[in-house]
Length: 493
Image 1 (cartoon, rainbow, N blue to C red):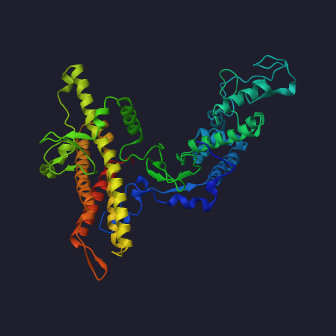
Image 2: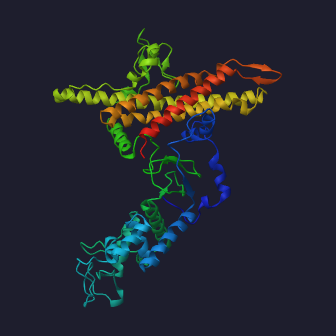
Image 3: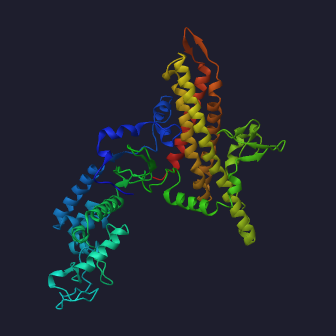
């Protein structure tokens, strides 16, 4: 992630206008304008995903950082460059730094490695004029040293700093002496760097490190995006960049993954990558019909294949009461007493069960994005033909967006369930997961058929079928309620 400090596009209001343009089928859009519509239908107003955050430009984030730097520098009576190193070490928690400094000022400075600890033997200023690295005899004014008094010639310091900055290092450049970890403040490093280009690069790396170590800040992971997200309390919550519309988890900067926590989703994605060849066959979106054995392809988001379930190939008629069984993996309680080969086969079987459902919902999201696009085009066509206004058809638009929002959450329930310990809590989670899955399939079924709902035109205005619209909006309410209930009970808090 690089930040161009000379031309910060995000500092100009007129260049932010394009960031709000909705990208059809983009996950980010699924969270916009749907919640209020559902809540009007009586849904629980508590949203477990609600999270307050602010998008800062480069200059705004610099001001935030410098305010804290000045506070610490004044309280600890150190230079701003040294205060920055202290703040980085303590993740910019100013109140903690001030409290610890009152208790033991020397310990704070030594812990942050800006001054030698009391246990370290200070080196006396050298009597000779020999550099400790190149062993060349130099003039006394050509020798430089940090508070540890390890003296080296200016040329060696320059080479040391240049190599590390070219390798991408900002904060973390330390003394060249062996076993000395004293940190070099930026006002010591900058004069040693040759050329403005390398100095600008060093400033960018410093800014990156300052933001990444700040417990309330995160850099937007969007390509070449300079926006910084600021929160009051760092949590694994959904945030969205105001400039590039990138949606991500604040805590880990990866794709938003509720209800799965950051550590678990990392394990799951690593496992999927490692076992990708094993699972390749499961990614092919074709199956044999359980009745006639003809190869069939799934071309919609819904798992209802006329008379059977796409996932388990069971009779769809029984899914109203048995959908829980379709989404729950049946553990073999006797597997611990069987051979290692049997345990390995069982482990693979379990992984493939969850991977297939994870991949299926990912595929369904892509297919439903196409449905969403078709609905958008259909609404536009009706409006152009004076068959109602955009407001008349807004509920179809919101239904398609809510469907994708719910399915996105459901997709990330499967890594959560895969790593979850067996027990009463897992049974409750699987029950809520199955309830959400059932309601999403009902909603998907109705959204995909929304265009075929019969409507009449009276006096040039659209007369909507009250039963059709009411049925769809009621299903939206139920699906969102299931989603919020599951997140409220299992989302990382």
